[in-house]
Image (cartoon, rainbow, N blue to C red; front, side, top):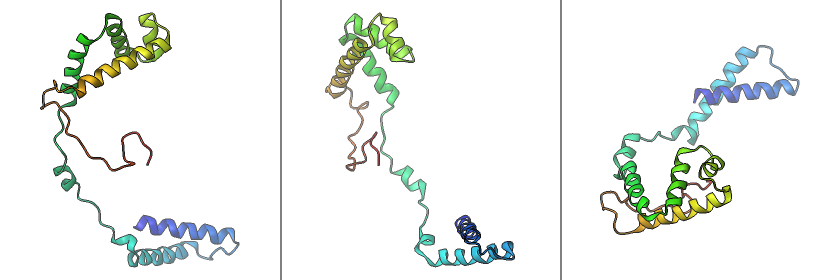
Length: 154
């Protein structure tokens, strides 16, 4: 709150100087304006906001399965469902930094490589949606507030 009051005081000093009515004693003027701003902040609703207790949030987190275990399970099952060319594309996608480099490693054009990744992704999603996944690895369904989906701007 002291930071906010001091920022307001410095802003008011800047405005006063730009208007041509600079105070004779800027140091004392800043002290008085900062004290008045702090008192105004204390009286306002701004100061009545309480910080959230993070231990309460931590205690209410759902138990998610270990993501590494889930991805290992999918990767094991996915290898069986892919063609040799798709397995090669998946290995290149995991080991290379860029799509172009991965496509070059497989001897594919980048657009063909992206198509191949699309079909690999569809097969992986199908595996995740399948009932064959053990319940311990399955992520619990989380109800999201509309507009708060991951990847969306708020």
